[in-house]
Image 1: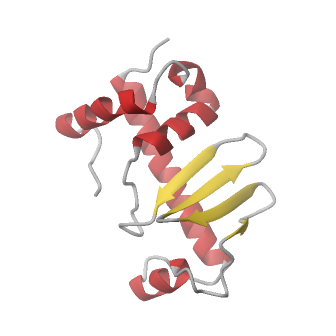
Image 2: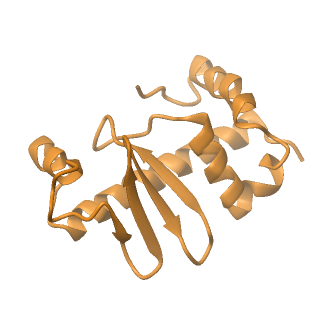
Length: 138
């Protein structure tokens, strides 16, 4: 079964929702309200000694800041969610490589995405933006 635009749109909504929730939880873990710009900037600042660059969000989820992203790995399900750190607290910028990782590590989508290359996702994502099925976030 191939991935359809409707299924991809649903996956992107889930991906964004999950990333937003994980970032919110991570901020709260360290005492930051990421909806407040100053707190968010301090929270993600590489020099912040209160927030380790990688560790455990919970017993089930690891996190790791790297470059301009924060990756989350759910140990039980092996699901990966990458959050591009621009545009807080909404986040949601889609990178085809990271979306492919999410699809490949999510039980609901992995069978459909295994034959798909991350480069092949790009025109599909742009088509979803063009039709308005998915909001483009820059």
